[in-house]
Image 1 (spheres, rainbow, N blue to C red):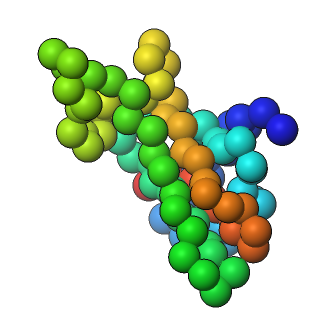
Image 2 (image 1 turned 90 degrees about the vertical axis):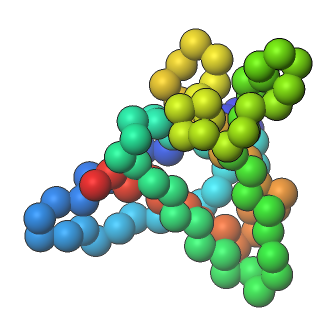
Length: 95
């Protein structure tokens, strides 16, 4: 299964009834506009590692965890992957 885009749900003045999607084995991309956040729900009862890829380097060193540097090179999207997707759902939300 290929990486899939996770649709961003807009939170309005009246709130939102969130929709959560089964986590994709190969991960998701999410538009990184500085107003979007990811919520992951783990129903498995065991810890699951969620990784936000930080692909950039400066002078050969990995970039520290800065919001703008999470994006995949040449895009406005970040890549999120999961160690396991059993009983894992996620949603992307914009405020």
